Image 1 (cartoon, rainbow, N blue to C red):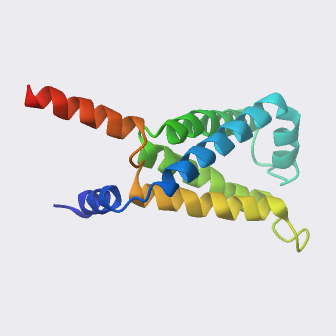
Image 2 (cartoon, rainbow, N blue to C red; image 1 turned 30 degrees about the vertical axis):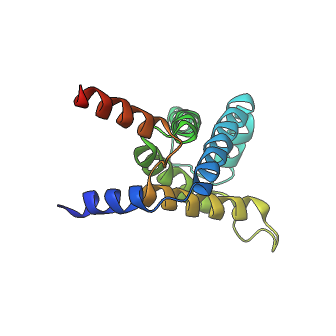
Length: 151
């Protein structure tokens, strides 16, 4: 059994129910963040423009904005529903880590954006290890598959 399967098995067997609530809130937060970026594209464009990414063309910046918005929306829904949770969390990691460097981390001692990013990053790492949990579509689909296998 390789390491990924061992981590998956350990995570599936050590999953307290309270983490399902945290997973749902994390997914909802990411979904809302993606919708907020979609509703206010100028804000996201301004954040990227403030980084003086002069080597990137406008098309490249537009593509980055599209990827960030879609990853947040699709990944948030997947995490919230608990289907392909590990894959969705892994896909979110580059965006969240890049956001830690894109926002000005040292702009003030009480930078709430930075704290939200750190909490999001920690939760993503937790769900990469422990998976989606008991109250998820993954578990529901596994139960249906097991029932069909019995008959």
